Length: 330
Image (cartoon, rainbow, N blue to C red; front, side, top):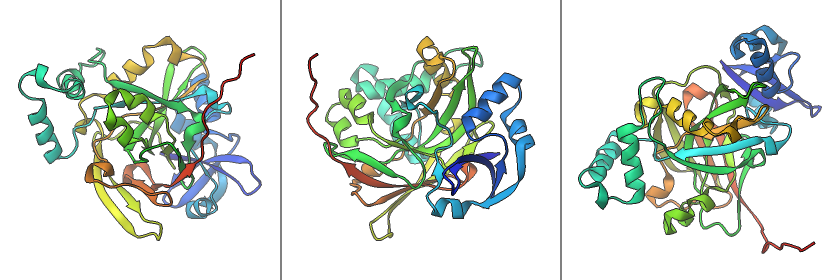
């Protein structure tokens, strides 16, 4: 099942089940969050509750999309109660990339960079037996719900950024129940979006490079994530011509960690189990246009598509002005 959130022409919020190009509008719920909270409290599956609430109204997805009415597939009324985080060095990539990576991490561990040491740790211990905890992944914080862009919205980078590059990823979407238990609502395709040039200056700049916007959606996949996910990441120039294209791979068959292990190492912290909060957690990627020496320019468009997740995610790169931060004494 695929769910989408959108605004109607009156400006109100709605959600619906997406089937091909048709949105079957869900009655009595205006947000994915409200639907998820009801499912948690009723101890019902999200898919069952959504199916039972579908009404007679149907809309064309492409019309909603063309009107710029799409919303991220999940959000919180207070963006401060939505965490956006991620894990890196988790993906094995294509067969060629895997072969090259295994050669890099072979031999004496002391000769490896810190990043390669962490990648090797994941390969060796990121897939523990069910019910056990494996090795910790690289983890980062991106921001709160205010940074999440819906499909069709701009991805705005600050004018001090050295790069605005895509990261095609799968994200897990979660709501924390009244009991402090994390509940996975589903998954969505995303553009984690980072400043790779800043990060490459020194890996300790990773935290700075990740404090950026991100794209998510347009659809939420209810249920388990496919073990093998194959999609395509594209960049279009300002005239709409295809500039760069490459396949990307995700899902546990293409990862050095299980999703359960990544979830454990995020939600093991009590801070991330506060009742009512929303979490959007990116699981990583191995495909970047910057690796092919592509520099994306403002006005160009990212497109990330994986058929299992419904329609493609599209966001245009833009820039916003910043000033030197001033802190005033009281």
